[in-house]
Structure formats: C-alpha cells, structure tokens
Amino acid sequence: MVLESPRQALIKKSMPVPKPLNGQVLVKVMACGICRTDLHIIDGDLKNPKLPLIPGHEIIGHIEKVGEGIRDFHEGDMVGIPWLGYTCGECKYCLNQQENLCERAIFTGYTKDGGFAQYMIAYQSYCFPISPKYANPGGAPLLCAGLIGYRSYGMMGSHARKIGIYGFGAAAHILVQVARQEGKSVFAFTRDGDHSAQEFALRMGATWAGGSKEPAPEKLDAAIIFAPVGSLVPKALRDLDKGGVVICGGIHMSDIPSFPYELLWEERIIRSVANLTRQDAKNFLTHASKFSIQTNVVLYPLEKANDAIADLKEGRIQGAAVLVME
Ligand SMILES: [Zn+2]
Ligand SMILES: [Zn+2]
Image: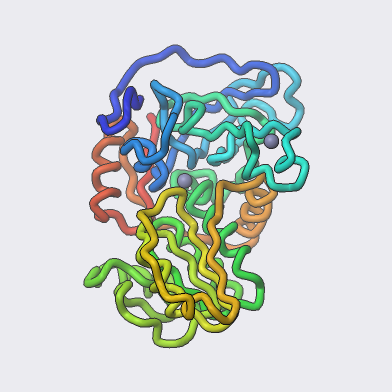
C-alpha cells in the first residue's frame, strides 16, 4: 500500500520483491501496526518523506532471505522491525549513545519503505528477535507504541509512582500494563466525554480515568502526553507535583499555548522524546518477554489500510490497528 503524495489515500500496487544488499535482510511481513506517526506522514505534518513510500514501522515478520555478511539472523527467524531503520555510527550523537538523534538516521516507513507490504528490506542491525509469545499480529504494536512508550516511561525517573497518561491509545494501553507490573499507579486522561475510552483505560489497569479537562485527583509525579494536543502541556503541569516531569511522547503536536511561569516553577520539567535507540528496543523487548503484555488489536487485511487509517483518525479504535498480510 503506497503513499504517492501526502494527503492522498494509499494505493494498492504490485511491485517486485526487493533484494537484500550487504548487511540487509528480506523480511516476509506477517503484520504491521498503524501508528499515529503514520497518520502524520500521510497528512503531510512530517516533511520530506521518501516518495512514493510504503509506510509502516511496527513490523512482525520472518527473515525470508539474508544478504551478504549476515551472521546474526538466519532464514525463518522471527523478527520485529521498528521506526529506527539505520544510523550512521559516526556523528556526535551516535558517538554519545544518542543514536535516536543521529544526523543521518533513516526511518522505517518514512525515509525508507516500511511494512504496509508483503515484503520489505531492513538492515540486520535494526531488526530484533521476537519472543514466540509476540510472534503474531498482537505483537506488532510493541514495536513502536510499546517502544516509544517505554522510552518515555524511562524518562520519568524510577522514583515516579503516580503517573498521568494523556491520550489513551496504543502506547498508553501497553504502558499502563508495564507501570502496573512495576507497582505504579496510572491516571488516564482521555478526550472529554469519551466514556468508552475511560472504561477501556480502567480495564487495562489504570487507577483512575477521566476527561483531559478534569484535574488529576492527586498530585502526579510524572505526566506522559501521547495525544498530539499542545494545550495538554500546561494542563499536565497543573496536575504535577513539585519536581515532576512532563514528557511529550509524540513526534508532532499542535502549538503549546503560553502559561504562567508558576506552573513550571519548583523544578518541574518539560521534555520531548524523539525516536528510539537500539538499546531501548532491547530493554523493552527483554521486559516484554519476562512479563505478559496483552495488546488490544483490531485487525485489517493489508488492502483495507485506508479504512484502518480512517478508523484510527476518528478515534474508533480501542488499542491499536494492525494490518495483516496474506
Ligand atoms: Zn510509531
Ligand atoms: Zn549518526
């Protein structure tokens, strides 16, 4: 399913199966989740995608063929492929354990073709072995919603016990389980009046759920904002205790309105989370293989990608939308 230009529907196309080059693998895609970032790419909010583009960066599949110089993987191995598709290894960020900020990074389903297809090419160093319990379409959302959520979670500091999550979609429904497994309380904020999302949050393990305009029932140690809504930043600051942190987990957000300095005073922090490192992927997948994470997925055949995108955009999906290949 191909994006030929932004703000247009994806087009179903037949293409030759690509060949893996040195250091690359050919992956037969089993399933690929749809992330909010895909919507931002398709809508043109994220500039300069590769065009035409096969989107998708929450990929579960098996290695069909290996290129030259591949030792880590063999044909038939199940792998997960995330957003980070390649880094240069030489820039100051790569040399400083910040490869998520690499100057020459390539992103799956954005600046290289991704997983809305039956086959795709990936660099072997950016593929991750997948535990058998996630080697199915339900595992796909772990590869971005799970990973970015986990990186955001790591930014809070381990002392944070009471966590607000603003926007209860794919990332939140995974993260609430991780937080509960570690004995933390999650306060879920959804669109105002979205009672079914609030019930969903409670069912997934949130301690409290309410509309995003409601004040938190207790002062929070940390807030993670997944909804692309800038006005949630001052709102989350209001909910925070002293020394707390607001983490913006999305790649795109509407403008943040001005707010009084007293909301930031007392060492409150606002920060963003950008992309992921390979270490994040290893850490999260190790955590996920020890614990049990249940994703709530709505499955669509690949050629129904446009319907899935519309459902996600309109908030009709609880959890995550996943495309399943033939
Ligand atoms: Zn994503
Ligand atoms: Zn680099």
